[in-house]
Each structure stands twice: as structure tokens, then as C-alpha cells.
Image (cartoon, rainbow, N blue to C red):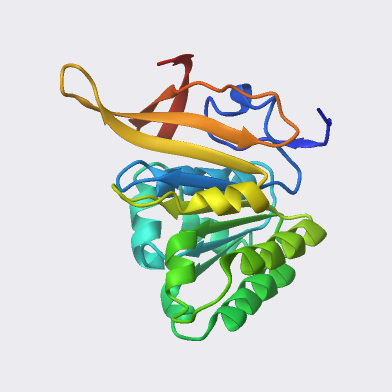
Length: 230
């Protein structure tokens, strides 16, 4: 395994499972269904980089508007507005991109990265970003283009992928050809019919990582991945 520079994720319990963090410039997908905590995870990833590491972040939100994101994440102690004022975080929402065409949307994201000198990019979600383009295109070609560009710029990237019950695994082709890492988060019913959430590192290039499910808990500071396996 290679030993590139590691960047902490800011997700409690995750870095211990992946040799201390992502490798600088990794492109990771977070795959999960509705209500599995993908937006909380993404926000913690972005907030930690901007607040603790002092690294500029671009966060493109397509699952909810910017106002709702700020409000909902404040419940977990994340003051996104303060980071925006400090120019450490740039939020882009679907209204700014919808209907403009995929090429224009990609240009907008890359321009924001260049303007802020961002070290991290979050897209929540890639599913909505692609479906909002209103065009037919080759997913593999498009993702290769984005991947190579972000790699060249040295941007560590997290993109969420919505996975619906009964739907084919949208991430499979991206996982095979593009993504450095794939994280899976999903809800499940226990024997006592209690709804729980679990997490697995399905893939992470250049990293000796856990290959088992780990429990996820939600608290007033966001989500945490517990060390024990299930």
C-alpha cells in the first residue's frame, strides 16, 4: 500500500478505520438511502476542514436549499454562516445551477474552487446534480473528466449518492472506474424491530481499512461511527 499524506475527515470514529484519514486528493463517494445521515456526514466533513484545519471548502447542496442547510446544521453546533463570512466556506445550491447544462454547472464548481483556493469539495448529492442537468450524457466520461480535474487541483472530494430501495446500485460503475473510496451508510431493523444505522468502508485505494459494518449513532454534535462491528 502507498503511504500518501493523510487528511483527517472530521467524522468521529472514521479515521481510525482508514489509517488516519483520506489521502490528500482522494475522491470518495458516500452511498446511502433516505434518512441515513449523508448530509450530516458531509457537513461535518466540510465544517471540520474549514473550522479546525483552516482549509477553504466548496459545498454544493442539491438535496436542500442553503438556508435550510444552515438552519439544520446549526442544531449540531455547526455555524456555517460564520464560516461563509470568514471566506472559509462557499455554499452553492441547486437554484444557482438548475437548467444551465452540465458543462456550465461543472464550470461553476471549478470556478468556485479556484476563487476560494478550496482544498475540499462536497457535492450533496451527485444524484441530484446529474439529474438536474436535463441532458443525456455519458456518466463514465463525465466522471472521468471531473475526477482528473479535481486530482490535478489536489482537491479532496466527497460526493453523496442517493440509493433508493429496489434501485440498481448507481455507484457501481463510478466505483469501478473513478472513485478512490466508497463509503456505505444504511438503515436496518434489529431483531427487536428497532431502526438503526450502520456504516462500512466498501473501498479505499491505498489504504488498509476495516471491511466490516460499524454502528452509527447520532447526537447533538452530529454523527459518530463506533469502533465495534456488527
